[in-house]
Length: 303
Figure 1: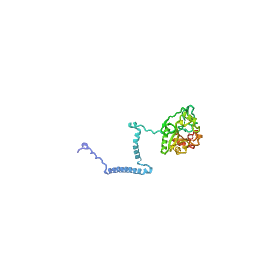
Figure 2: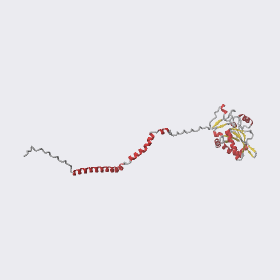
Figure 3: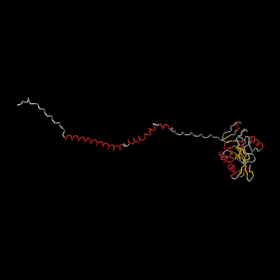
Figure 4: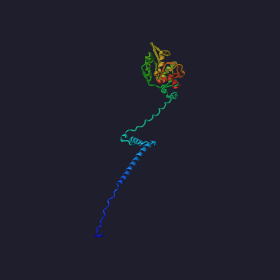
């Protein structure tokens, strides 16, 4: 009989590794799936809650998108202004047009006083661009305007001499009278200081002015007459003729006025002369006719 001590020692076989029961694994996977479902459901519920609560709270879900789009559209314009390119720097900047300064009102010219000295009377007293020569506003023998010969019909004088502007207007008036069936003639035009002195010494003092006070020295005045049926119509007869009536009505259209109207000698210093016409320009002629006395003095507010 072998003793127990002599028998070799037996090594116990390793126990097989324990495995989870199949039910336990199934139970763990089920919980994971439930957790995932609950998480997904929570996300869906949160999204739905946001859609419902947004309009109630006044939140526009698309506002962020709109803001982004607006920012995207506006960005290029901001960049273009803030960062000019080399090409744009070559284009001159456009500045707003400056507001024109208001045109100052013209200074009043009527009613000015004649303050010329004796030596300054070599030129006429001028008011609003109109030479005013009369007994109250004289010129000296040194005054000699520029003159031209005017090609119109004359009677009693060798030629018609006037300042250029008056000569041009006279030719137009003579042509208009001819179209109306009237023939005009000039009996006197420019007269020098010396010639006027001779006339004043030999003529009626009420019908002529002394030397230096006559408008004829300006080269802007004419004594007119007409021809009707071969007869010269002049003097006071002109006032009663169709030619005289035509002159009074139409002369202002060409810048001439009847310089010494009837019953205005207190203003003009000369009695009625229906033959004496003076060039003042179209605007002034119409202005004179519109006055109460139809005198140049009233129009210029001078005496």
